[in-house]
Length: 432
Ligand code: 4AD
Ligand code: MG
Image (cartoon, rainbow, N blue to C red; front, top):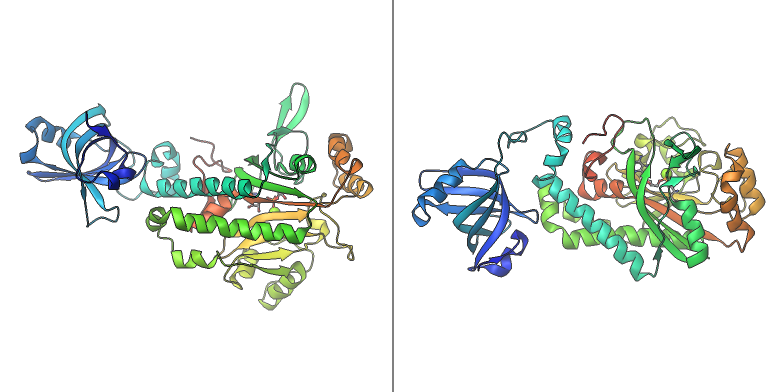
């Protein structure tokens, strides 16, 4: 019996007879030789079929295969110096598994809307495949980073009665005669977790009914939310920058081939692994923007042009600290000496990718928090459990949320966040 291998492992099987379950991505043939472009999910490479070396019906079958037909290839692995992948298979036999006809995504150029309609098939192609490999690496490295630092993963619920990030972007649903919402953030539950386990994180889907149609906004996205008890903001910022640098380093170390397919400049990425990242205050950011010709007044929130301009002043991610209280959520710790700002930071990615992390130190005082909840127009009854965290052994604690798809979009150098998730949910898209 010949052994079954994966394309990605070809290197370990040079000059061996193997079989691989594959799909056809493209082909070229002359009368005497056929070049089949193959993929098996792990990687892409070429199969070569020489007419004089195989049975006539095998060569005939190869000529009749359509794009995305599935079949077993049998043959010998050879080094292939002409391809970046470095290996190919000299095919001795083929066995058809599933035929394919009129596959819609032909090798020519297609528009993005068409490709998104065909997303279930488009995922098979090289570019989405490379992006999903980077996504997978970032997920893997995330668990490694927090496990090595002894964080406990505490999963936050998806159905919830709370609205940590404001009530305008909530997805409402009915919950057996009561109101419920899809989670905007696991944070409030992570705070309960931090007071129970010290250092915790969640990693789950979050939902924002944002009616904004931008390159950075998804309706459904994944967020990593660490929360640490007995920790002030400065220490949290250090964890944030170490985490981001760790993600970039691991993508550089493990996704070389994917980065090549995406055309991402690795020397640029390498700069993002150098720490520390700079910190500027919101006040300084306003000054920089005004000097740069932006018509902004102290107190406004930044949109994408402002974030891009600020990030462009640095060649690494930059923290913007202590935003106005009025534009931030209710739970942030007030500044000890200033009424108008809170102890928080956004991490802005370079190259126009904008905010990838939002975080803060959390308010610890019961009365302050209750007043803030009321002022935000929220129902204190829904937050009784959250207020308990301030009733029973309240401690300084800090945390943050990294948007997975924002980080992928930046690290891969993509134009739009929709390519960073397998099946994007956008303002005008819930198919497929
Ligand atoms: O800044 P945000 O809203 O912060 C929170 O939700 C906090 N509760 C996090 C925490 O402290 N535990 O969101 C955090 C991050 C943003 O920096 C961004 O990367 C991402 O989530 N994000 C989105 N990503 C894609 N599409 C959207 N609509 C996003 N909204 C936020
Ligand atoms: Mg934010």
